[in-house]
Length: 142
Image (tube, rainbow, N blue to C red; front, side, top):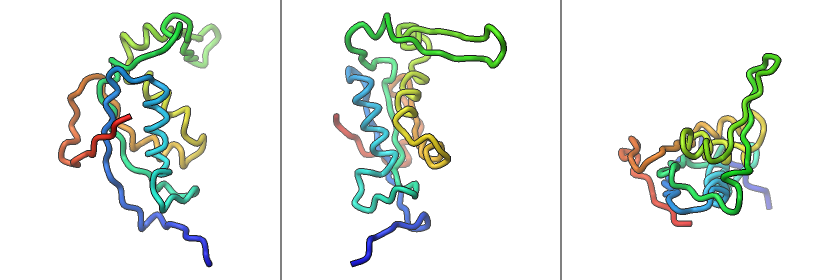
């Protein structure tokens, strides 16, 4: 029996929506990464972007457990000497909730061109309003 391998021409994309309100950040991110990779499908093929599109709403209301709000630190570097910028999770949640969720999901995707291609199918919004109602996204419960 031959192993089935999906071709990129045969991929069909569905849209899913995840409400992050009151949910833990890691659980939301891992579910989103699972769908973006396409591992929920029986036709999963590791070397093809066979995943679906994911919309995450209410990113500003995501939950962080323990002392992560005070102790978790996000780093950025400008490339110049002394250009390291540090922000705590509390600041990120308050001012940049979309970036915080995007970073969590991106860290769970492959670190190559395929992973970057999968990341383009992620749409994160700070509140419940989104502009993808025409795609008829299917709601997913965690």
